[in-house]
Image 1 (tube, rainbow, N blue to C red):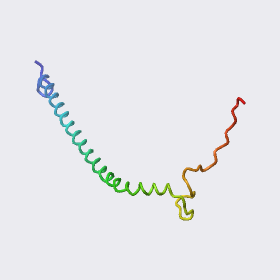
Image 2 (cartoon, one colour):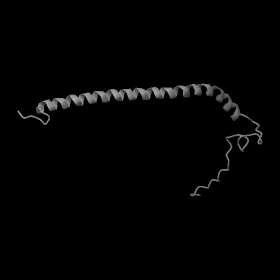
Image 3 (cartoon, rainbow, N blue to C red):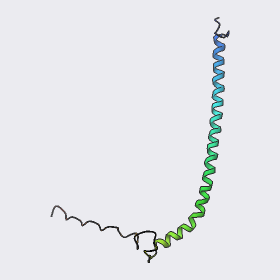
Image 4 (cartoon, rainbow, N blue to C red):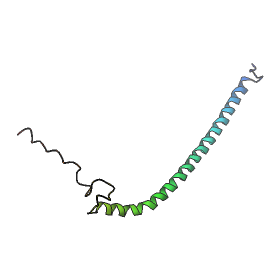
Length: 103
């Protein structure tokens, strides 16, 4: 039987390597799980205030948008936009259509 560099047999060296590899793998998996849990906690910490702000802001936004779109008179001096009137009217006239080429 040959002796390894540290006074151990090759079989013991292989066994020690396997044990070390399995310990490293187990610690790595535990670290990955902990990091994943931390990321999930951080995501929840951010998403809860965003959800609360959305729930607070959405109800007043819906009637404001409804009445803003359906407004018939807009004071051009007090309006936030430059155009007054409906948003459905085109900003520029559409180009005239060409007659069919077969005629």
